[in-house]
Image (cartoon, one colour):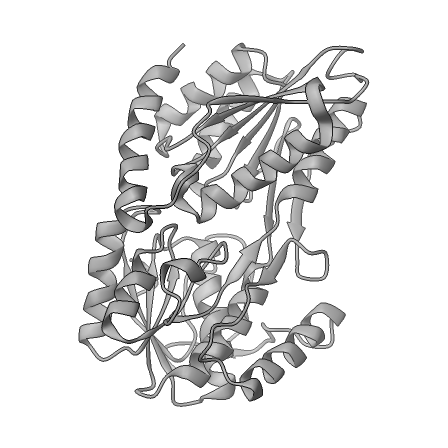
Length: 373
């Protein structure tokens, strides 16, 4: 198997995680879970082999950790009839296709790839292995045996933007962002709209890191924003490094993916967080039953895939009440965070377009920085 070299990368990346947050994690490569009585994909009595491929270490306590929590829930749900393989810190790019194909060759009938940059490579692997089901997180391409899935992080982003807008005293909010792709850009736009709902004078300055998980680089990017006067830091990154830098500087922090209060408890405001477990359980059951069909699944706050982390100590009761009211309106459908027309960075009024593809490549009014990286 080609997995040994990937595991070597994983060990190095796990060391990065320890530098950033000293957080722990389950480093088992393969675990077993199970149940299910077979179907057209898994024969009766056959163990369904499921694989998860992550761009970062599951010890990041962020994006990959959140997905791994979903995998652990899948294990708990099914018992010994499912075997789970977890690969960590697999780089995006052409090499990932070989990883997906190795997994399919090894008998994995359900393969999850949890990063945007896997999309085209997973699509190619799916074409070569039509008897396996492939599921890609955050992308927008599908085929007969490949679906995609994500959730309305922008709903949580808008609400956390409200918290940031209320918290800033300098009216300068910093945003440490990974790559200029649709999911990140729409998150920044939603966050900025939320911040400016409660504080029309607030601006959001974006610094791109070109990495999902690199704690030192994230910390450096954060410091550059703090040096410019930002007193609130938000992020689309996978480690707690931005929050730790914010805490050291006496600023406040909006996290992402999970409740990271423990890493910067004074700076902490809140974060959009994920619950992947129900979707993973649902998908595995469909494969077991032979009822799975390709889809583009998009969860939301109403369905529970997206939520808010607990508020930090500095968030006022008034701000909490405003956010909870708006959250209820988002869940009920009474409020839409993106309503045409929207004013962009240049001051022009424009239709939103498709927020899920590359055409959503512009920033709203109030964002400082380039949407192209």
